[in-house]
Length: 304
Image (cartoon, rainbow, N blue to C red; front, side):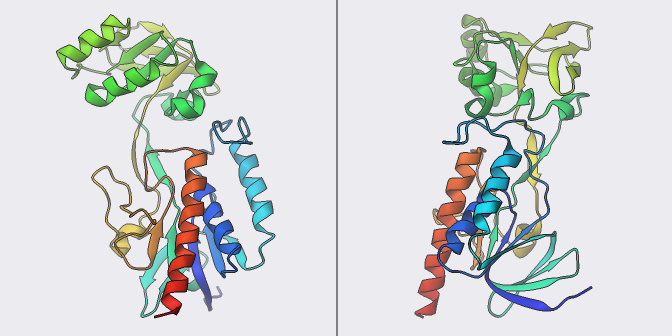
């Protein structure tokens, strides 16, 4: 395998919405950029993307394809299908090694690698994730408005979630999947709004090709629902930022300042790996901004 080192000004690891948006910003500033993408977006099972101006209802793959076609107009940007497996801090910049044995050097490094959802151990959950088991009402709530809806959660997080979802539908059952940890006042508030609280553990999610049909409980009761909201646990999709020493927030996101900078000089992050606001529009905006900030830092560095 060819391991010749190739120089770039910026290497972007992750070629989904934040990464491609940052690459566009940098391509338009004439920067020599490499985008490395493993082709495993977290929304690959989601049929449609919403709440993104001019692309409402488009498939995620179609949005990506348009972005790639437009990005190819900038001849200083190169994209490769590969996986970054090692990142090393050099005297000036960074060296990235890939699974194909390639090595690349860059002055700046941007992680737009997203997160990996950790699915609960409930049969049918993973098959429905992103289709009828959803996380964001702003992205998908309109399509299931005023329909029979469930929420899988417990405690304070579930209470706030129920308050939010109640704006889209009045037919809600909150599944705590075990003994409720809601406070008494929270229970009173939810029941006053006719939100049912179900503590029986879930046996499985009944579905047809990812389309939810109902929630089967361990007591053999079946709730007929059209959608289920849940915010599963997650881990960083790529562990290279952690290996480089990048700090994480208490919630597990890469800790960045308002310019997308991490605590490691020259290392940036943007997109779902930095924020709970998981939406295509948000990732595009963060990527565009960080691309501009990286260009500004490169300019400032050249005047030192």
